[in-house]
Length: 349
Ligand code: TXA
Ligand code: MG
Image (cartoon, protein in one colour):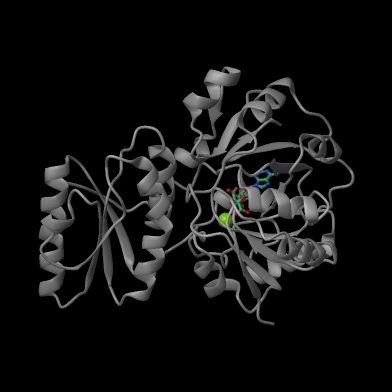
């Protein structure tokens, strides 16, 4: 199978292609589509067979649950047991947007979609292509990130084609995704709403709307004793082919340390990759350098993180050194993904 690729923008939807994509989903097939976070691999969420196909195409363990994407607020009530008041408020303020909420599931949601759990994750994505596709598909689209399990999430249709181009029916190319990191997940089955995965919406922004919000201790811990609650956060999400190390400290010290280490490795005959920023790019004397964005914009760093990690898989490097990004707002989300990719290997400069 070779996926049909339909190119469009949010400003100019190609309704005929979206109708066709909706029909593929209604018949149990798979369609990848852009959201504002990353590309998703969609299947009909209420069809257990479609969920099985999703796990198969991604090579994903079947105990790692999928997020159900909806396009209308009314759709939420049909797939969950009840909606707590605070969740209702968050939905009204943040949807469509990069927020996933977890509830007790209703009967109609198959266990295949929830990885066997009695809870279900739901999100209304903030992308017009995604919303129209969900409507055309009948309202409930299960969609994990559209990457092969263990690779960085796709922020471009080209990444989806690379990983899944011969495994699914259709790919909708809506250009580069806006945010570039997966949605914030908030668990409402806990007494106090709990962040299971950090994202663009951070703890402070959420608690300004609904009061106390906790962070799952499992996602901050570097040790393996504290297990994250979201099954997907337990896996070493993505390991680059080369060893990745994150260098922390004052900017000047970080640059010096990375330069020192790269020289050492080069002398050993190793090829080194460096993940830096526009501000520091010219300061590195050797190695294959890639700027992730500018330190003046957290958005640019988030947007390019997965793309840069993927690009290094194409390069023949033995080791990658990355600057740390202590970006105040999205920093937690960015460092969470980067440290997972690095297997929590940190060097203090
Ligand atoms: O931004 C996003 O959320 C993207 C786009 C495509 O919408 N989707 C995405 O899906 O990141 P995925 O499958 O790659 O990640 C879903 C995460 C996993 O870590 C999974 O374990 C967790 O959500 N999850 C899903 N349902 C859950 C549940 N009922 N309880 C706990 N964790 C859950
Ligand atoms: Mg994923």
